[in-house]
Length: 102
Image (cartoon, rainbow, N blue to C red; front, side, top):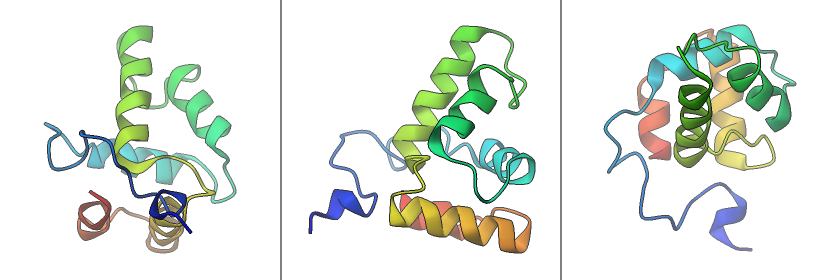
């Protein structure tokens, strides 16, 4: 099994090279969306519903892209699924969880 099937990335960008880990944005997503949300539901909430309160369509798309690079936002990936489930269980994003994904 390839490690990227778990959610690891071979991209040259990620949490260690990013200016922001977008922890507040992850908290907003976890607080606002149900545990059973799918990737399309999350993307729709960010871009179409502007759940992150971004000023422009371009900034919403950029936020979605950056969050996908950092966390995959894909429940089929084990790392994201664990982060998502832990966030819903505790009601907040513990700062160590996103660090472990970076």
